[in-house]
Image: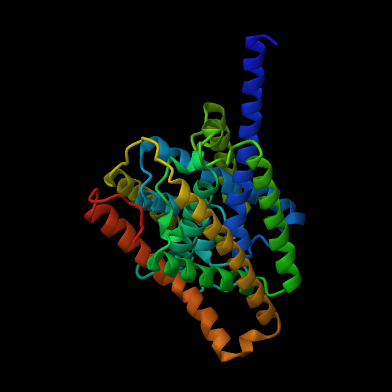
Length: 373
């Protein structure tokens, strides 16, 4: 084989591996938030998931991580802001922030102050500021950074979740309790819970195993960096933008159009985007040099991550079993579930005040944003 033919063959192979990697990323970007929340229940036999939900999560995640890396805004405060932008799809697409959760009469915890009856407390402060910002965006970044060093070199270390410190363990435990209880409570049918979780775990594990055979997951030396990097090429970026435009354009008037609020609320929502983008501009940028990989640390964190995900699954299963057996009749269980859902609001507000206002703005640039302590 001539050199030119060998090079062409190598390029085709790299493109194929890139596509396979992005498909795995797309599934994980969907699975982490939707399987845990229970909103992806029965995903394996739901055409809606494959037509809309997976493209929605994948396109948001890929586009926002691309922009974050390209602009050098990859500190955890900046990434949290990108997560908030992600979560605001719950206005235009699902209308949840404007009208409440599906199947509920009104908002779960009332509305936010004087800005009208259009923004729910839990739907905004809990769903967007905690769940989507953390579980839909920051958590997938940590997972991908830990499992694929070529991806992780573009982002700070995910010590906020995986550090072997007291604070790291406390954050893992707190997030485990919240997500496990939410998952099991929202899928109180044990059969449905297993039918939702088990296929997702199998697909994720088999996909990762297959990708690992190509060298993408190697720690030392880091290989296939071009295949696993978060930057999208022109074609990938263009396709992602087309998908986003189609999703927003079609769902705005198609999904629950009767829940669209007055124009004032929609203008307020647009203003929120502008405020978040202004904060991103204010936040300091990180150097675009690739982070060095600590081989021992990354190996340990992979073990911690896998154990943590399995623990979320098992706690959710236990919660589902208890809930299906009438657990809400027990005061302690009812109080625990209520505390978790109320805690999402509290954590969302605290995260914004501490991570963005305090760490990002007031202490901007004073230390590396690793959240290690």
